[in-house]
Length: 147
Image 1 (spheres, one colour):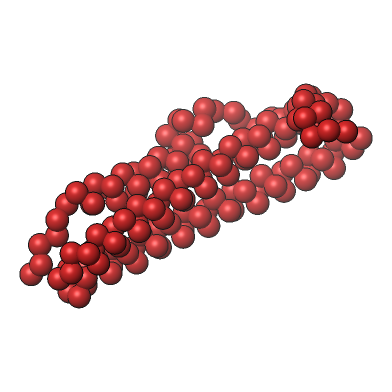
Image 2 (cartoon, helix red, strand yellow):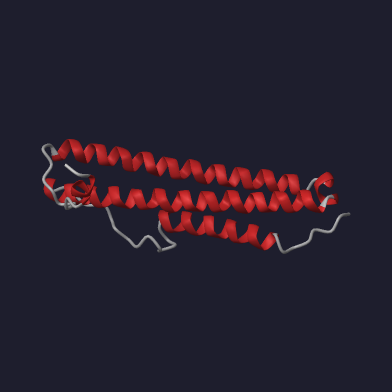
């Protein structure tokens, strides 16, 4: 079997044990939800650490140090933004497979709101990552004045 053949398999395919597959899908959905929470905590902790460093007198007196920290904050926030997008994409794929299995098992399906809705967990997390990245980008153009 080629890799392309396995990708072409429809999501509604019949599993040999749909109940067991449904349990596995739910476990992976829970894992990815936890992973996304940890990534958000790490992003906010890293951002807070960089802001703390930027407020120190030693960094404020050196232009290059401050700009390097700001650029580092932007790179880190963009990396976390990409990770958030990818993990949310994978989570949505798991949710869709879970819904296909739920229909087959006559279980209640998971809600399927738009990923871009800011009132959902996925949307709020994504937009929070975007805001942090935008703030770091903006900070590159602001000059902090030493005391």
